[in-house]
Figure 1 (cartoon, rainbow, N blue to C red):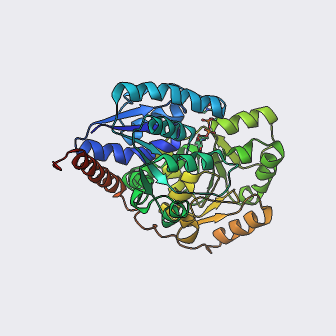
Figure 2 (figure 1 turned 120 degrees about the vertical axis):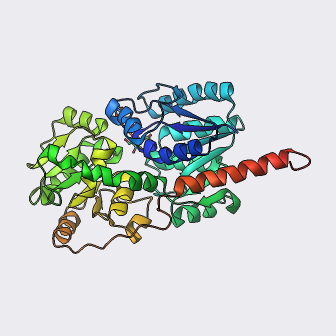
Length: 370
Ligand code: UD1
């Protein structure tokens, strides 16, 4: 059985790493395809190096484009890969355009698809990721969910219960493996920061950064943070472009830096007093690290980070951001718990399910069940 793992953008790399590791440990044949949706060294190569991922067997070098063109280019290139290598299973992770494109190609070639991080819903279809998730899920044969809400959403949408496997969160495997080393490297020193005495910001969602009025209002709302703490801001390329286009006035005490490698960012999160973000991955990682997280969105597809974790949705609400910051500074913040099955064993569980599924297929294909 040949498994084809597909990655494209930064948040995919930490999700695929435990699966690649586990397939390798069991000597199962696999192919790693990078679509090249993210291509800058600090958005891609450095993650491969730090996570110990093998060099991709195939790099499609798609790069950036409009949604339709980017998705279409991945589809055309990935179809050729599938026709050449004839994988028995295509694994896609997360919700980026590469996830959608690879799932569509495989399903149309009748190659079964496994979707890792299935069933998450923000119920906001203005987010491109929501469309990608819904379509990828409904094309998949194996749906691996990270939290109960994922399973519930899929069942409500009519996905057969037998296809859904609640296995936990792959990113937690990667985080647990690397957290100690990440902190040991003291990445805050490079920015003259003191552990526990700085805040960390990420911002890249189109809904937050593509509209001038929204983006500048959000930056102004950060005054309640920067008045108390230095705020480190690793700037995503999309956001960097907007900052350059608009020359938005920036709060004092906001330090703009390049996108950080996995280990440095993990270490920075682990010792931040608080994190502000619009990223999905960061909401999950702060919950694992038990660091207060203010999510600059009105919805989240990750409700367990609100109920069990350290996350709070603050949208663009200046007053709520200010009150939340004050509560965090006064130590009045709920202590997070690791959500169920975010335990470092997720890659193993996923490959167990894949092996059982493959065994079931081969016995069904043989008239004698051997
Ligand atoms: C993509 C994902 C998003 C994910 C995010 C993580 C989709 C629809 N969105 O958004 O879900 O949270 O990745 O980062 O798939 N660019 C570079 N260098 C790179 C990559 C991008 O400069 O290595 C620039 C390009 O100018 C591009 C822009 O960033 O136009 C946005 O990149 P794109 O892949 O379109 O989407 P992201 O905003 O990164």
